[in-house]
Length: 258
Image 1 (tube, rainbow, N blue to C red):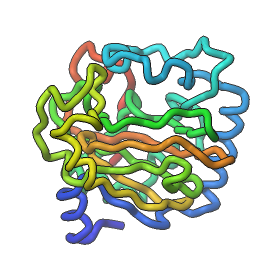
Image 2: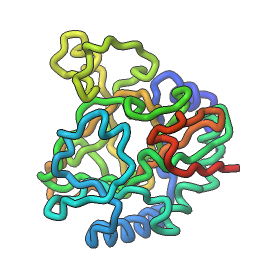
Image 3: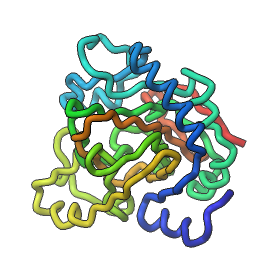
Image 4: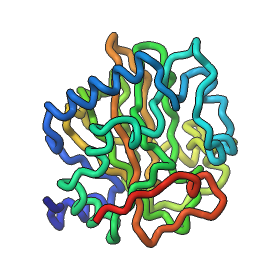
């Protein structure tokens, strides 16, 4: 399976693309069952909700030990899922999506387990909203040819924290003053207001996949429903894109997809 020229152009221009009904619902349900078990038993490495918004840019850029000591806090994400279960690994190495990833990267496809590689959660009324940001801000690579692959494992909408994007923001140049000290894009900065008004989102259902560029501004609301929202995200890069020696990005294995 490959993208049409129009789909590829859409991704290149807007920085994201939705692939509807991409993965079979039965596979999504199987992945979700394993994810729920790992969440229930708090299988490390995990990231908890406690103190999430207080973490510094340096912490996010440099930390390599994801073991959690905050046992009293709600799990925000399961880390390092590639090696957790064969179902997770099989999705990240899925042969159907490889030609598409090769198109958007215009290079051989490499999974980087250093970033994302996670089961993401938004629990009802507990998790904070995710502010506007670019993922690339704490990744260390030779260029920006990195794309994240987001798999919806159930319905995602504005009420439970679906992703929102600012189209074309991956190609824009910004001033330092448009970001805060943790490099979140400031909603109250006059330079940002009109751009944020262009935000878009789409309701997702189980099996939908979203591809988005590492510099695309995105965010998500809190989950105001009564049910958890659980998603799967991993990141790929082009083979020619190299992790900076000694950085967190270089501390974890990479998987070349033929």
